[in-house]
Length: 297
Image 1 (cartoon, one colour):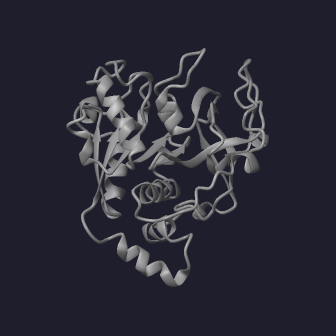
Image 2 (spheres, one colour):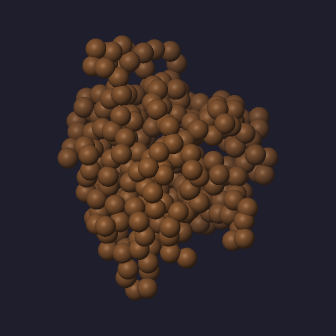
């Protein structure tokens, strides 16, 4: 499957409304000032190649999101500087995009300036008060909860937490909400290769958009039982207070980031999280992934 730029644009904002309204929605997205989006790529843990910079040159993921964002009415600012979340700076952003790892309040692996404790609190409060959030791949491998609980408030916000992953592999992803902006272009299901996260700590208010079809996966290798479990959420949306939250576990590989279908999903997510388009996010996790709470210990 492949999409050109025009097809991607049509897929990201109009799939859930009648064709007669399509032109009005696309035009409305072009009016006014661009939405300001902070793309945060700090790695306090593992540094993923798609967000790794060479000198001052933006990483692949940063370049792609900046470019397609500009085409679709978003001013994307890519940074690894946690000071951008300080309470006196955070109000300028309409949405936040994360591809991050680890405890972002410490310098960690990449040694870039961390968030302050006040910055983390300001960020989470901004989401509760109505800002948008988009997380990709390792955003769930960020701010882990203590083993004995309670959940870290960031994990409560994003709606899931990384456990482990197996080897990269082709697998089938099921589309459970083709009406969500950017999702319809995938069809009813699709095959794609990526590094797939096994996840836990799902709340019961998730609106699942894409499902990890574990029947198509190599479940156990070398003692790693990451996928020895029923189908579970792979991409979802939820409300967090007044804020709109979106997450997809895709986004490890360079060719995934370069795929117009994936790019269209991210633009659709930005459109929804910033309120440029509407979509139903009624909880459906118990219906479309009834075994979502079962996973290897």
